[in-house]
Image (cartoon, rainbow, N blue to C red; front, side, top):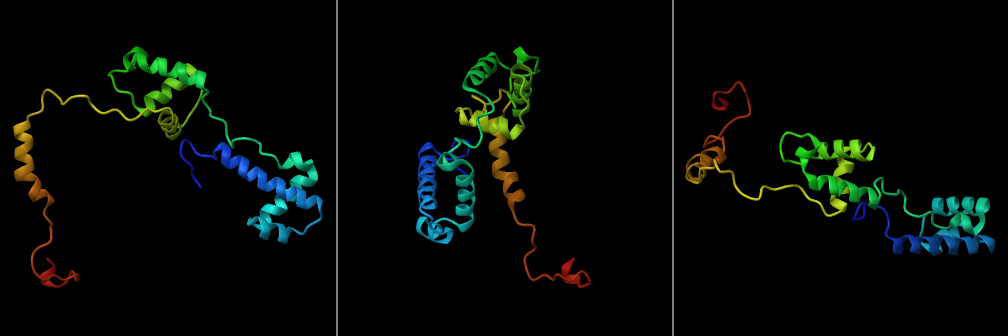
Length: 179
């Protein structure tokens, strides 16, 4: 199951699940059967079996939460450096125009932070820190509003119109009505 803000469980949810595992651990110590524990705690038998194995190997400490499944690949300090570099603009980093693309941010991360991240990971990282895709602040100077309105009124209805001919047709390629 996916969770907001980069995936994983919240701290509260992780603590709740740890509590269930610890309840199971106390019942393991009491000698209860796996199926009964699974039914009472409303979890699968396989989960209880996995917890019992962890309990046998590490005791109650073996049932405690190990923390988030994956630590962020970019620390807050590293992201602060990245934000500073992004603030300088793409041309300061040798790019031709003033557009930050995900590939360019990926290149910047590789050069500046010495980390290799995929493009989707770069997108999730930026989104997690409140960044969004860029939209132009104003329209292009070359834009002809009159031509745009004319196109919307005259050309778009023809383009949008269905290609079907009125009347009955046939799906057979050999019948004249299908041509």
